[in-house]
Image (cartoon, rainbow, N blue to C red; front, top):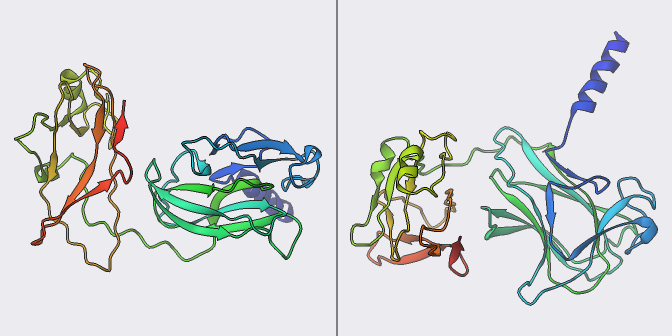
Length: 305
């Protein structure tokens, strides 16, 4: 019985895999680094003479090597893909850092959407951990959302080193499922909630992927919901220059003490005449003010090619 129990436990532990993991001893595909980050080992020290994974000079880690371009304001590390929504277990992000500088601020942000424009700071530090002269753990409980993780800083000094990034299940109360005010996948009667405003050159159509490809050869061959040609989506074919508005007629009531997010998927290509396309999302207040507010993107016009 003891042999069977030990065998079972070993099987469980050996088959447990973190959701995301980078220890820099093998190729890291779960996280993406911009040009401000180098890779080294403890024998070629960039601030500390050993890594965290192996705790030896032969172990590898990432170090901050600022190479700011005129366009960039932040050095950044981010998860390569969005984390999936976990509704039954809590997710945590772990990483280890070291700096010898007392003043070296950086933060960890959670961003929604592929572009991460809506970002919230979940952890920040001023610099060196005064209680140790070694690697320091950062442990962040993640919200119940589809999200990306960003590590950002905008200082030009050194040293700062990172090692052992991971996202895994952790202890905590069962996540509260998100409250959904409205959803539409264009596969049901909800399509009647959307109209293409007729006074504009571009006209939106809601149709399945196989029919969309007959109208525009550059249209996606499958929808997002089902991933096949019979699934539906909203299509705008930009064959000529002009504007087109898809209007959601369904009114959504949000009180001043509530916070909600708009999520949508889009697929953009150049039109047959190689016109550049710009996509923006607006809200239209239904009260007396009738205020129209741009929701996305938050910066310049979002152009896709």
